[in-house]
Image 1 (cartoon, rainbow, N blue to C red):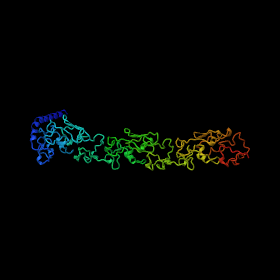
Image 2 (tube, rainbow, N blue to C red):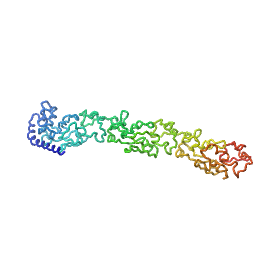
Image 3 (spheres, helix red, strand yellow):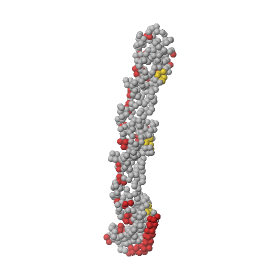
Image 4 (cartoon, rainbow, N blue to C red):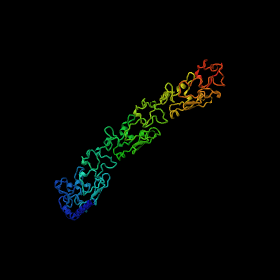
Length: 565
């Protein structure tokens, strides 16, 4: 670098010495006497003007108009080597090349109207550099440093350190004025022809040099697929760098989201990104990676989603964690993995969701009768939970009546706690009345009433009516009803009932616990009278055989039917 600067300094010194010592003393004076040199530039130019301005610099034998013929080489000192500042890169600038069009002289100098115009031949070398329109494009303030022989802050060369007296060839051009690709906010892709096809081809060759370095960036915009996506849609693959593999974070699950899966709707680009109106909109092509800006469904139900590029996962999004309080992260964006029903929510979701997997009972518009196939994916993961709840209790439990079987988990055997002796109680027997649901449970006014679906199984027991007769305080523990009046645990006047099984097992429904004598003795112990008469003598709800109930609805009803005959 030091050697190159020394060479430039020596060349500049030689040019300056010749200019001051020879040119001003002889060449300029000779030029002033030359025919045509004092003519004004605005006079008509004819072939007779070949020598115009070339008396001092340039070559009258060169092709082109008089302005091009007048540009060095040759300079005022007769030099032709580019290492001389008076020569430098004049030839490259004044003539078109494979990378740019020819520049006019007034892009770098004030072209005089006549030889004796102020500022032309009346000042010391080097010639003043007065930049024109092109160099100032983009509100730049270009300047020329005579010491380093280089331009700074020009549109033409950007921040390049191009040295005037060491001109580069067109083979060195790409990448010397701007990076490949230019830094952000330019898209970080080296596929120049994608946007600049009028200027450069797919092989990186300039095909229209007259449109290059002309003060206007030629690009075609409007079709998102120019930079990313394919003919199918604008989403990767390919990404802006040409990647197409799923493992590339800029590719990942774009297509899965945009097309939707077997169980989810297609997402719009605007749900994760700001879709620009124009290619050059702020935040669009400023720099990769693309900003993830959630809107719409991801923010449903007061969710606050966020994207973590390090882990390649979303957190807090409704889409992958719709249940309130469920803070699970999404699947890894760039790892192919199928999702099932439990990937985003429990099956069933946790409380207060009903603890049943019979999804179709409430979500029949979305979930099929098999309770896992999504039959309308447009209504799944759309920010709205499609629930259709009927007032028919049997939608969730029961069949012929609201009591199990089946229970909310689909069980139908009496050995299941959710089934047990429900039907025995609800239907009654030959020797006992039918028990209303409200004597053991709080019957909700509506399906969604508080205390109905919003608590964990098993269903709450809230005894009332006959179960509390005679001051009883029944409880359900470990599958057994303890201390209920219904089964003789408490008898009128606190008398003993004499029953052999006053705390029957709920899930034992084989008739063995309902035999006479299970709830009270036959006859009950004193102070009940000894049996000098049949039961029917005092209790009109039983036949003379002492076994058959003529009015079972009056038995186990909290009232002792008693009448002496």
